[in-house]
Image: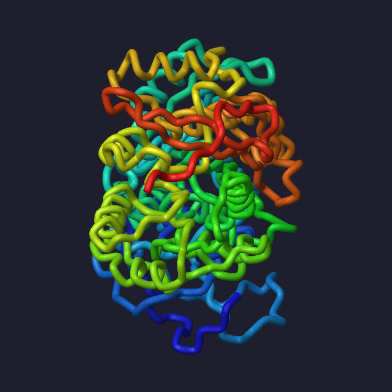
Length: 532
């Protein structure tokens, strides 16, 4: 409990806006989630109370069902050895039968799956007593599994979720007959939401799915940051995420690679893996080993571009000279300062993290300023065929990491499709070119379904988390193993190096050029230097 001097018995408690309702029922308290706040739940014979730190101004909760909620000293049964000014929320039996306003609710979170289970179970004691329109009553016999899915369907990160409609349709069809777990069959509902490439919206949507939709498992793309995972960790909700370096997922949540988290898991490559792939791409290239480093000023860019812990640090240790004059803002339209520095230092290899429009601008300005590197190995901007095609002939010889290709020798555990069949189905269905994130997003649902099946009880967060902690499963991107990476709660994915070539007619084709990081994936052709 946190000592808060301004609050005394009888004073008003501070309340915060929230996007969702929460309900109070007999001898339980449900509170909204709107920030990384932890609390403890304690039970006493005739009351429930929560101790937690408050943030924000004190307000009068007029005309809400919180009008009788007060700060209250700890009950006599409680340990009195703590700080004298620790604060509790006391809710009488009358208040426990009321609806909480969605405008003013305490800011807090549930940090332990067991406590979340207790809250759900306690609600069953008052089954039949619906409270306003805040949500469904939980029942122990519930045979529906609810899976939340959050991804950037719109906004600057939308290319990562371009295949969502196709993938969701495939997954829903594969689960249309239900999912058999522990001798019982469950209906499966997937509730998908678009975070619009906004971290704040991502966090709010996660809170809504957890608090209002009562999901049993969260799946998420976290290329814009780990807000979904953060909410799930606080609420005791099992979560699997992908589409971001594990460092950019773990460290913003203040995680320790040796300890991990209670409830959330992630699979993807790490910065060390991409650095190894890039070095593998360059190892036989005839260059002076002078690298121009250009990374965006955002979560993945700062993680990957860190001069000591990021990719440039790994390149320097391998004997490359690094030229780095700082990050560029997302959406930048002027790279002349970087280019000028690269020309001055004799840079022959350019690497970094760009969005496709930013990389197109960099290439245009390089041509105008007479800068002609021998190798350009770029993350993100060269992932998508559409973005590469927009570069026209300039895309010839550009290199990048490869997360997944139709030529990968793996099959889906959900649909039975090979990587090639999955890509072909996507192209036939959507009339669009395949993209690398298709395989990764598909594997996200494969991992989620396998974890639910292995749990023995998909309605138990603790059992689902336990199954995830030791999950080993084959997917369309290869094997995922959350216990073998040496990083708690993380499974690594296979990454190799590749180069784009523009075919006759202007269609770009990506070929594997290096595979020392994943020898089971075959090399298709050798790296060629950029044409001057």
